[in-house]
Image (cartoon, rainbow, N blue to C red; front, side, top):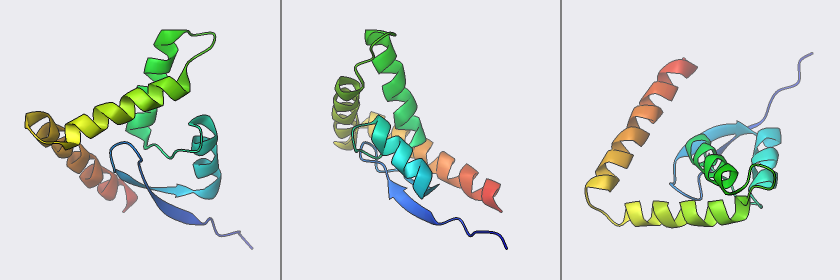
Length: 100
């Protein structure tokens, strides 16, 4: 008999995007980002920024704080927010089509 995989819906602490994830994946993301949950897009941006500081000893915590500040700035409004929201909506639509 196969074990059922438990899936939870997580909301990114940076941009608010929601993703369905397994508990194991959630634990791995939180362990890497100091207890914070980041979506795939934000986690890649943070990893890139952290690696730019020093590939040998990336500053993940500093990169997370900087990215969270950037996302808060986008949420305030203006053209950048509309572009970001459009991109998020496209991803939601595309991910919904892939699950079917």
